[in-house]
Image 1 (cartoon, helix red, strand yellow):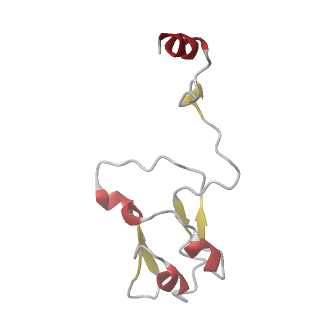
Image 2: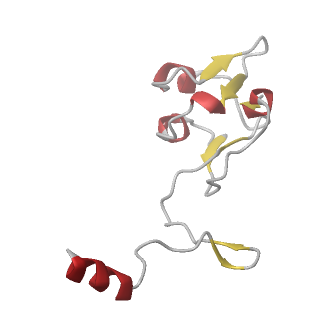
Length: 107
């Protein structure tokens, strides 16, 4: 057991630092699915995304547009795949932090 402890002390760490350089984030993979981006002007109100969302994140509003409750989102990407006008996109932003849950609702 002592030999294994000494061996692991001399190895390089498995994890990477959060910031590679001051102000620069860790690069994410090309197909990473992060925070949702919604272009309200491009949305045609077909509501296909509401039907396909497994978490019930997307709700319809009065004017046949949608609202997203990101606090419930599992980032599966099904809404972005089914949108005919590509009004929903997944960004590479992985920091979804806020002090208020109201800020996690996209309209």
